[in-house]
Amino acid sequence: MGHPSIHDRIESSRPGVARLKIRSAVTLLVAVCLSMAVIVIWEGWRSRQYHLHDKEVAMSNLAQTLSSQAQATIKQADTLLLTLVDRLENDGIDGGRINRLQRLLSAQRSELSQIHGLFVYDETGRWIANSNGAEVGVANNSDREYFIFHRDHPDRGPHIGPSIKSRSSGEWIMTVSRRVNHPDGSFAGVALATIYLSHFLQLYDSIDIGSNGVISLIADDARIVVRRPFHDADIGSSLSKSPLFTQLLPVSSAGTATITSVIDGVERVTGYRRVEGYPLIVFTALNKDEVLASWRKESLLSAAIVSLLLGFLGVLGYRLIKLMKQQNRIQNELLGAQDKLLEVNRNLELLALEDALTGLANRRQFDLFIHAEAGRARRNHTGLALLMIDVDHFKAFNDRYGHLAGDDCLRKIGAIIVDTIKRPGDLASRFGGEEFAVVLPGTDYVGAFLLAEKIRSAVLASGLEHSESPEGVVTVSVGVCGYDAASQAATEDLIGAADKALYVAKASGRNMSVIAN
Figure 1 (tube, rainbow, N blue to C red):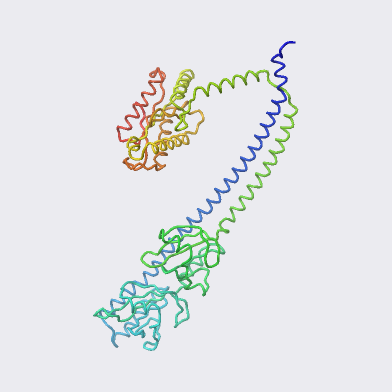
Figure 2: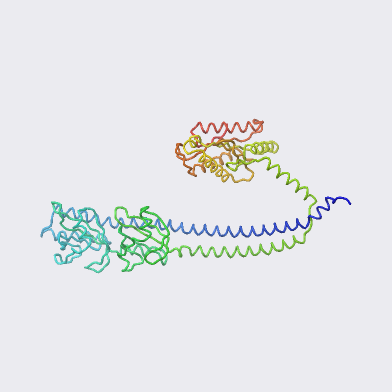
């Protein structure tokens, strides 16, 4: 009885190969479907983050604008007070001057629509003069917060008190006040300007921030001065336990965040900013659900379209697999190709062409690859370029941080190089020590230089600390050379030219790319 022929061996392997193809087709189909699902989910997530970031920027800009408006409004009132205090302290008040002062206050109030009134009180809280024509000498405001503050504090700067209801008109007002002194520096009274809260609300109500958005003007002590939507009960409420005061303001005087309100429990996309020169904060916020409403519609539509496409692929894949099950043909070259593949795998294992530290190609693989590509470039008259990359001040880095940190630095730079070169036909290798090489088939020196700059910029942007470097971070220098078959007979000439360009880059100050002459 003779041994089985190659034909018999092929015939006997047909069922196994058919099953392998079917399994591969099923795996491919599942992989494609999963990839599409992952891409849609990822794109949906990125779209969601874009929507939120876009509204954060809008809220930051709005907070900045409203902060400037609040600062200008209060500054106008404060300027009147400053002039008034100076007049009172220099001219004094007697019976003949009160009437002129009344007329002056009325004239100044009429110039500014946001001013509710201008008032002057003596050291007992008695009304001396006012802009509203009310009878003086009758009312007493010694119980008001602003009066008590100035009586007990020698500070001459402006004071913004809590929002109150005016005793004369019953309207909600903000108080801005300054202390008046006797010539000896003792307390002589208070000059007060009151600003309509409706002045702020009219502006806030004109801004489209959705049905559940919020705009607030808040004092430094966390009390609400005015809030849109306006509710009497909210005025004077404390926000000291809100994320704005516990997390955000201690870190920065302006910014954006997504936080949950302590007043109504609604999660909002917010922007905030301190008012320059005054103890106030402007806070703007959009309802997060309203911000994401359009994103949800887009995401649902995308999900529906992808579901239909996945269903179509599923039906198509099922039919393809069904046809493959009926196929039982094996190519005669299968066994030979299998033996060659095994032989190639054994050779690859013996060559050990990977650098153990960085995972890049090692010097041996680099030499084989560049020789092969140089031959192909000569035969086909195609381009070939080489980058030689050296880590700047690497010895100083090792001396400062140790060799373990140096190894980690080389691994990170190797990863940056791999991430930057996108073409599968390019080869990144560790040339030796802190030096790397990148072989770029089909590329001229211009394209190679652009890629070199991308690698250099990516290393610089990674921010790897290097206190011994002038830049304060790890940088690289790059030598660039395009292959010229006429003048560079051997690949050593190409390597030498790139290495000389690298030397010029390092001699010229490092952290740069230089093209070989």
